[in-house]
Structures are given as C-alpha cells and as structure tokens.
Image (cartoon, rainbow, N blue to C red; front, side):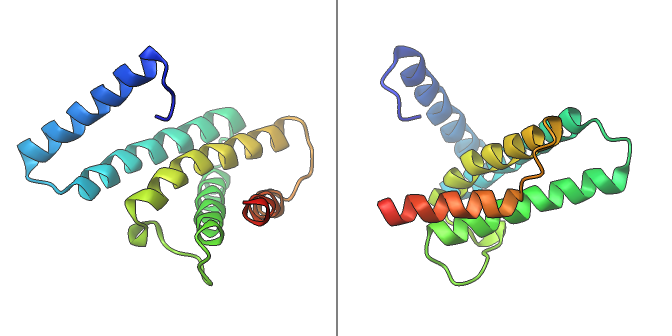
Length: 137
C-alpha cells in the first residue's frame, strides 16, 4: 500500500472502491469495513499455516492458530506501548493494519520453524524483534 509502483497505485484505488462500495451498500463506517477485510485476511493466514504444517490433528491446528493470533496481538500491544495484550476487537484501524502484516510474519516464522526444525521460541523471537525496532525508532 505504500509503494509508488503503478500496480500498487491501481491496487490502492481498487481497495478504495471496494471499501467505498461496501460502505455505501451496507451503511457501514470505514473501520467496520476494515474489520471485515481483516477477518478475511486472518482466515487466509490461518489457512496458509494449516496447509504448511499439514497436521491432521485438529487440536494441533487449533493450538497453532491461537498461538499465532496471541503472539500477534501481544506484539501489537508492545508496538503501541500498551501494558497488556489488547484484543483484536479493541484495536484501532491502524493497529489492525499493522496486525495483518505482523500476522503474516508470525505464521511464516512458525512455518519455517517447523519445516527446518529450528526449535525457536516464536514469541521470544517476535517480541525481541519488536523491542529492537521500538528502541531504534
């Protein structure tokens, strides 16, 4: 969304039109539309995680999904300087936008950790990275 490439500008315009149309057709406020789009993004991220880990164990799939979302929500809280983990429902549109990117990073790290048997602590790796970014900003 921050690129100046022609494709990115076209994508930005398309997103604007989709949101405008949803708001117009459904009488939704902008943040409500964004929450709907975020929910779809989360479903896609969890599907990607599930497919990559290829687990037939429903409990393991549920555990990994909860783990990815919890780590992401806690990391967003750290980024925004909140003392406790914020729930997705309480996040602002800016937080939700950051959350989407971070959820992808968390799920990708979980996949790499499993695929290459890295034995990383996903939460520690993510939180340390966030804290380093916050300190240097």
